[in-house]
Length: 318
Ligand SMILES: Nc1ncnc2c1ncn2[C@@H]1O[C@H](COP(=O)(O)OP(=O)(O)OP(=O)(O)O)[C@@H](O)[C@H]1O
Ligand SMILES: [Mg+2]
Image (cartoon, rainbow, N blue to C red; front, side, top):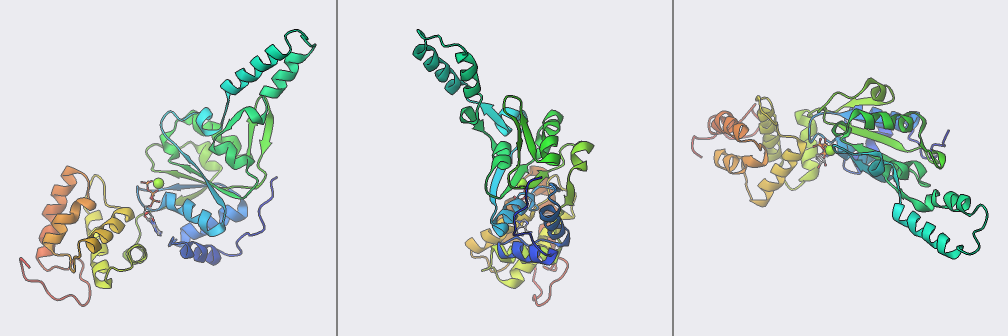
């Protein structure tokens, strides 16, 4: 089995702190699974709605551990040639041609055998992300992003890598991981993944955060935003998420909204500010209508969704 690097974390708290230092506020479950991924050397499958920090967790792990990030972005139709490796046919052909012209008169015995051995060597290989992660000399985090976009055959192809940390290339044989990569797979749940894949992974469900955690995240990404404003912003976002929307706003949208409010110099979130900027939060026509109807009105009314301390009561139309 490949060796784990020396710098293994000693506790969940240490992992959590490390992630915090590179700007990722992990909850207990995320910190635990990140710890286990490193200690047990098992891949992690991270599922959850869009924009809750699945991809960012892998990036943050890479930053906090100093491991290089190798990323495979999945899409429909992704195949081995783009994910694993591909023979460089053009280079192989040139090699064969060079050989043929150089040895035309000699016609040495066994020359084809030699050429064949040559052209099916690593020099003639395009290394794609999965092979790159497995053959890396340095420690890496391998992010297989949005695995649900691929098909089941692709998942099946991954099984050897996920359970044995090795890849078999028919012409070259087995390539084993030199340094055990930390592997994270993310999925938006657009299709059910196979049991075989799930069995090989630790599992993390990332959901929308609590008000307190989201407030911390927003403050981290937009530190100039006034505390009361940030609080109000997060409460409004949570209120919107409670509606039955096609696409509820994610953490990414909360952060964008906070930055937008800073840029336009808003000092309060009143109805007008909200209506002008709500397309940052909701991005479907029907959602916009619903939010305008339900939330804008509330902002004009008592002004305080859920109520936050210290806010003066608002007069209608202010
Ligand atoms: N716990 C967190 N701490 C700090 N920032 C976070 C956290 N969670 C999410 N973010 C921020 O939220 C944004 C969205 O995160 P990310 O892109 O990882 O979402 P995702 O779950 O991969 O979404 P998608 O499914 O659309 O790919 C990022 O800018 C990230 O910085
Ligand atoms: Mg993502």
